[in-house]
Amino acid sequence: MQHFTAYLPDESATLALGAALARAVAPGLVIYLHGDLGAGKTALTRALLRACGHQGTVKSPTYTLSEPYRVQLAGAPVNLIHYDLYRMASPEEFLDAGFREDFDGKNICIVEWPEKGEPVLPPPDVRVLLTVSGAGRTVELQALSPQGLLCLDRLSFPAG
Image (tube, rainbow, N blue to C red; front, side, top):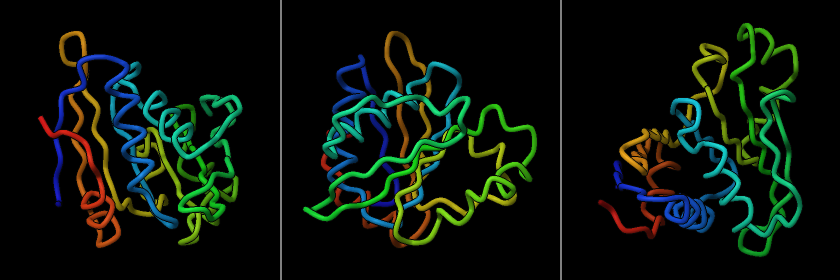
C-alpha cells in the first residue's frame, strides 16, 4: 500500500492509530509528521511509544529538539528518537547537534516539523499528514521508499 487515509473522530482514534503504527514500524524507519500546532503529532508519537512498551513520561521535544527512547520491537531493543524541529532557527542547527548521525538505518526516527530541517534532513520512508477536521482529524500516510511500503503494508487500521 502506497497511500492510506483515515478520519480520526477523537483522541482515542489517534491513540489507536499510534498503536497500529507501533505494530508496523521497523528499525531504520524515518517518519515525518506534518500538521499545524495541535493537529496531534505528539499525541500520535506518544501512543506509538506506549504501544512499543515505553512506561515512562513521553515529553514533547519542543525545547530539547530530540528525545531518545529505548523500546522493544518483536522482542528486540530499538532506539526510537522523537524530534521536534519547530524551534530550530536553521537547518545547520540540525547538523551542529549531530542529529544526522542518528539516521543510521538502525534507529527509528520520528520528526515533527521536518520542513525546518530541509535540505539537510535525511528523506522520509513515511510521511504522515494530520489535519484538524471538525471535532477530529484527517490523517494521510504516504509511503516514500521500499521500507515505507513495507510499513504501510503491515499497517492494520480501518481506512476511511
